[in-house]
Image 1: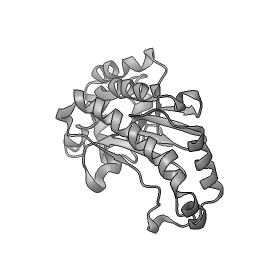
Image 2: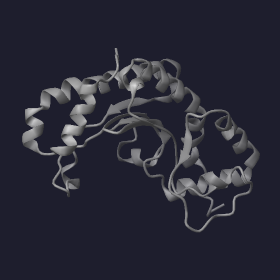
Image 3: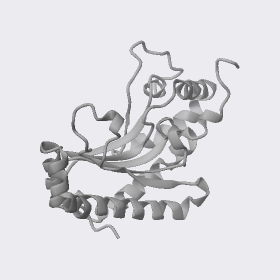
Length: 226
């Protein structure tokens, strides 16, 4: 059971950022396992179990990231990530970057969680715009609960040349190249409490209607061929 991260977790992350090399990591590997990896795995497992209990039909899996960078991406001479995350998603192999996933991420300065795409395909976002064009009122109904909460905010890069959305409320979504609904917090007391798990579970439940909407986008017809 997740009991919270600790100040030792934060100390390890800062230490790794300042000493991102094999010698320091090997000397402090036990700290990584006990103070960082174990609580992250415990948090991911607990959140996944609670989400799975209500949504077993979704076919979700959950993953915890590795501390080691892909050797092909070690261009800065720093072989380790200074943050870890877990995700809850459908098993999509290499396609995970372009499908919606739930995530939680912890870095030395802050933590974040939410739902979104690492990098949505241009075709996926075109299909989102086509859906909005077809029934903007239905999309406005989907996003209406966001106006009544303060946990999640829409995030993602936008097109430099604005696209003309059908309504004012749909415009922020219509102009995204990729998107996420994200909560980001500076590291503080809640990080050290098991109540963090409950907050993430409730957040994912709130976001589930958005997941159900996004995950079906790729099944829509190509708007260029309609």
